[in-house]
Length: 453
Image (cartoon, rainbow, N blue to C red; front, side, top):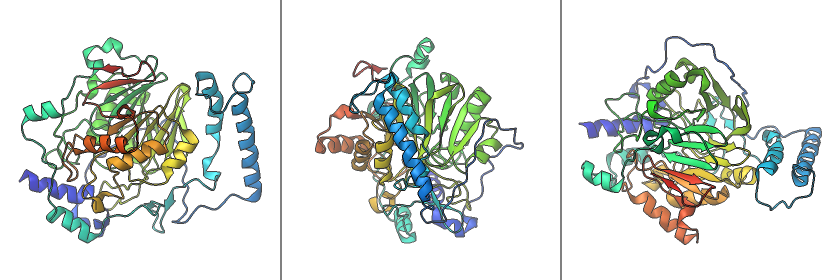
């Protein structure tokens, strides 16, 4: 019975964007609080292009932009102390602070940047030719006929051997949880990672619930539990959300984080999600369009930029693509981190790499990719994940979006195997794009290979 329920929920929640013509298929979940508190420090900017490229800047606007770019480039090349520097010189703290001036450009004025777009109905769309949502026939075949090869063991002993869940270092020794030098990443399962960099603790797409569903009695269930609870986390300064799907925006986790940290926690979300978080009681919400940026109060040296991804959004029967989706580029004085969220492969990762790379670390999905004709537009496979790693000019990448929920039909341990093969085919070192056990940490940009267990 549970298997049947899971397949039904996947049909309605995971891949049901086109079924919104039939609202009876999915009841709206009652996830909203009864009152909406006053929101502090929020930002709205509603730019739409009705499914076509945005209006190009005028000649005077282009001239002003070129002048601004010229000034910024001159400042960057001259360096923080006014002396000439080699543009190829690796970033250091002082030069990074100088080059941050370039982040203040309005990238939406640049013609070669992919802007966010809406269709004539006001719903967000993917502007790339690589986007394709599966047809009705594909979806029916996927849910009714295709064989599920995930084969997740029912034995806890087997799972503990194949995919151990480790107690995070900050649970073992809370005194070590203050951010130190370097960039430290801890995988907490699925797309949830804790990143400690440049004095900030950042959490991505937090899900600590047992099911990726509006209901905790049905829907996709974790086969590897979270390595810690929200109460066991260290201080969290910021949460970034990639999109509205239940395995990336979990109501229970949002409520628990808000109950513990309150207004001290800043939430960064794409356009269209602020109202939902406000109704959940979150007070410190920053809603951004692609290429817009902001920071955590008191930490303006670290810039959070909402950047593009190729995906879609849905939480109820009628809200298909009413909120935007995106990736996040987090740019500090000493380190740069990229979070892909959930995405298919598209050309924007090259744009992101050109503007903000090289990244010290990127978190890139490698799972939920088969059958390919159904998943290709929305989920990269390990080979495409390696392409993103290269497009971003990432020094290292960590694999996410695998080993937690069985959301597609590939064998549950296949993603890391194919990742290693893809790296070998590209002539890349295995450690350049690594996997972690649940709860395991790695220190980046310090002594190479440091692992905290």
